[in-house]
Amino acid sequence: MYLNNKMLFSIHILADEEFDELCFEFGLELDEITSEKEILIREQGGEKAEGASDVVLYKIDVPANRYDLLCLEGLVRGLQVFKEKLEAPRYKRVSPADGGEPQRLVITEETASVRPHAVAAVLRNITFTQERYESFIELQEKLHQNICRKRTLVAIGTHDLDTISGPFTYTAKPPGEIRFKPLSQSREYTAAELMSLYKTDSHLRHYLHIIENEPLYPIIYDSNGIVLSMPPIINGDHSKISLNTKNIFIECTATDLTKAKITLDMVVTMFSVYCDEPFTVEEAEVVYPDGRLSVYPELAYRTETLSGDFINKRVGINESAESIAQLLTRMCLRSEVSGEGDLIQVEIPPTRADVIHACDIMEDAAIAYGFNNIVRSTPRTYTVANQLPVNKLTELLRQDLTAAGFTEALTFALCSEEDIADKLRKNITETRAVHISNPKTADFQVARTSLLPGLLKTIAANRKMPLPLKLFEISDVVLKDETKDVGARNNRRLCAVYYNKSPGFEVIHGLLDRVMQLLDVKPGRNQGYHIQASYLKIYFNDSTFFPGRCAEIFSCGKSIGHLGVLHPDVISRFELTMPCSAIDIDIEPFL
Image 1 (cartoon, rainbow, N blue to C red):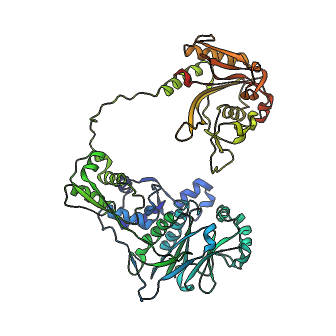
Image 2: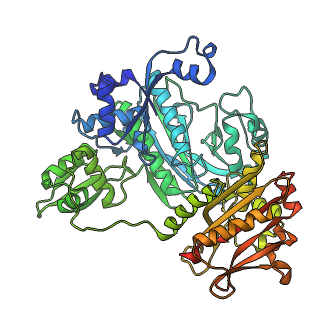
Image 3: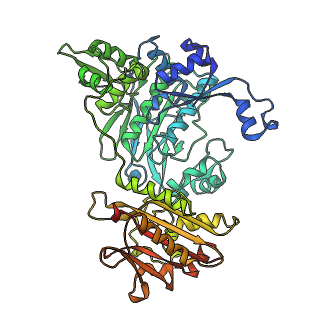
């Protein structure tokens, strides 16, 4: 996230070096000190940067699970508590000030098939400035990209409560029956028309797939039939918030109720500071289709008890329970010694959804203590580190294959189904490939079952290099294995290819002999190694190689791989034009 230098005055920091040190002490990293103008010059050139702001910006890397640090309000508040400039606030859920009924959101049963959950809350008498308004919008977008998983789990909607009237209805309808004026548009559209309109929108088109193929689209109405939003795509223009907005109705629709609760808590706790009564949030009721009534936001505080000895041993320090409690309080975890030995009661606020286990509390104590302040000590248990045998063998073979004139390549562990099946003249259903359940791109659909496709793609990308091209890789492939608890296992293999105007089978055969010599395996059928022409027996893997120009490799009577001249179809499918020989063997039997 970016923080401008004006915000540093609120935490009494003026020097860049001092702020850098503070970030480190707080467990953050000051990644870059720049400005909007410098960013535009670097990314788009000097002409685009004319008139851009020279205000200093601090780019800070924030841990992915620290949702409370994703906005300026949360970050500055956390740093102020850390520096003991103020106490961590206590957040309260309150009833409507006038004694009236809370705002109510009624969920209908039609939403069950699309986004079945919803939560809501109200921020009363809030005061926005331009900076506060922009930060409010920015936090929603960051949460959408983070915990909301690009709106697939949760979608946030914020509305000017003074322009709408409750109770509100969250339902789902066919896209043709939904019609409203969306945010930043000049006329009304049906939901179907909106999906077509936003296909070219650089921002919203990334979310269309979430509901695009659903028969019903989720929609939220007020009591007068005015559309608040069509989650997770767009809000209605009628209830849009502005700098003059005083009361905000916040709704989060979701497929994951836990994530929705966390998201709502983050939004209201970060910006309730700007309400007339700071850190108070007005409750809202949510009625489920089965009649259940829930009140949100939860703003739940919970207490964990752990010993000072637990923290001292795991961090490597020797502090009293009182000192540790003070350290945790600086991390917005109010703590006090319970009076029973060195037990510490730690109160976890609703802003700290990242604290799940006692280890998370221990980590915060270590951060507050300062990692640089932990004294180096010799472990009580002495152990001798050793390299894994498979990695040691791999390193030795890498050195000698390089000495034999081959160049090492490092290719992706994921590939497309086509790479390990069609291009190698195999059937994907007969491979033992591990499939990715939700691949983001067609290039990474499965875990590789062979190193050969990666090497051939590397050659295809370097065809203009002088011939011959001699590449090798020693790495893991992934194979299904029902005997393993995860259903798959890694297998370390060696693969090498020779690409030239002639096939070079003798080069690959010579490489096999050299590898066996290095492994101290003699030629022979019983205790040594030998190759057997594949035409003597039908093997499925032989479809990758040219008939009559391939062989199976045996060591101590067990098959460990293949070598030979690749089939012309394989060559052409990888967009190569010259013959190629390859060897692919399992090196784990030699450990």
